Image 1 (cartoon, rainbow, N blue to C red):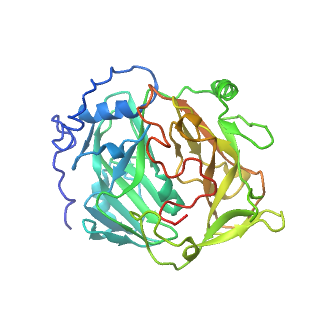
Image 2: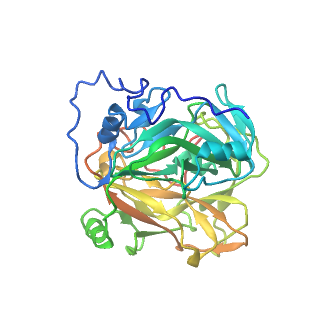
Image 3: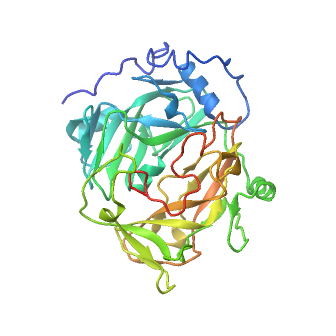
Length: 398
């Protein structure tokens, strides 16, 4: 079997990667002073990590990859079709598992199709040399979730997905499993993002209640806010426009989607609209994929970040929101928002499930940043989903 393509620089090498050591060299601003505050690292701190060689890459990292509180990760040169999803475990690296379970290697340089229902492992361009005390968590980007591209981050010796332990030195890999649509991707395609943290999370429900009182985080139609291990988010199955549109269900057996194309595809060829006709809720069919919206409008203050946590299996056999990161400025007036509804990616498991209007489907966990980002989600970045209603992925015409 062929080895994985070699890295330009060994991720354990003490030297900065030549692809990144001159990043932002033309910036006139001095490097920010290091902060010791616990919390999520904002964009200036991410840029400093790149300069310091703590985040490295086989190709130069662009400013466009740096989001207000996360870094976009890029697919590398090859994808490996594997027989099954896996975790390497504490005694193994990802490469050894790829060698064990691979079926064939796919070249991504000029683009390749990742087929629905198949599992792929892709070495990413980025790799890490984290200092002690800095850990990370990953999530799909919003458009990946809205296309039902199930993608998770794997590291060497990992015992869980999407988690990077403090002080990790090594490569990063993406597991990619398109669930509904076959997709065309390329070397450099960005399907996931990583968020870095200093220290442990210490943001409590008491902190959340104080923040909700000072700067409303969630604007509920009935004024009620449920705070317990995060802020409850419920589903809107009534619709707010005259058409009573409440969501979309993905069609089966569609054409493939080139994830790099924006505003290109006719939504009607890929989605069936769902309207509220009888007020009896929505029965989720097993294995169907739905796009719905929250009742609540969400705001993330500029000095905080948020994440939608997994649903509680005690309230229903369904999964909501593959893409869980909410950046600083989401829905915030300073960034062009006025409270923005969360779009929910929903899939039922095993059995049909009745989802009713106002049912809680997830919880938002907030955390402080260690400092202010230099740009906010929204107008500063030309973000596709600021002030969104019920919005499909950016690849579809609006």
